[in-house]
Amino acid sequence: MTVLSGGDAAPGAREFRTAMAAFATGVTVVTTTAPDGERYGMTVNAFSSVSLDPLLLLVCLRADSRGLDLIDGSGVFTVNVLSEEQQDLSQWFADRRRPADSSVFEGLPVGRGATGCPVLLGAAASFDCRLHGLLGAGDHVVVTGSVVALTHRPGARPLLFHAGGYGRLAGEAAPAHPRLRVVPD
Image (tube, rainbow, N blue to C red; front, side, top):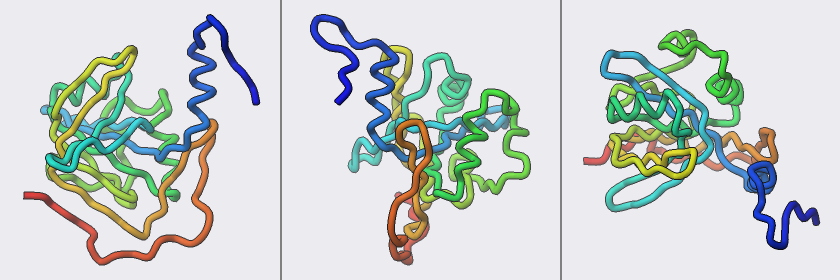
């Protein structure tokens, strides 16, 4: 066991980040389309369901991120849960050197969701949302979304992230189910 801090000393950001890396997460790309038609995407792993009635989810975005500004301005976003075949997309949308305009999607398999936001084809699931709320939380903002449409590929295996690297589930893929697209009333 490694003790990174203890006693009266509060842990620092580095220790906190190292300990949080023990928690395996899925990987998402959050996309949005601005009112002027500009499309944007960013890799995010802070994602969770919030409520079943109404259907709500959340993502956490850096308070100074361009994506947050665009989502706040457009009122819409899509969370694309990446499949294990999409590690390259995770890296692409996390690269600070990627194009800052809609050309970031050129050559990628992309559809359009009910809100007009980019949906990454081949994702394990995609949740098309209208902005429900923003809550400041330190250097991040918790963005809640009301799910207006979703796509789910039950046989797709999720891309995982743990201890600073990508991983995959062990064993066989789950059997596919016939329901692929659900659009709530």
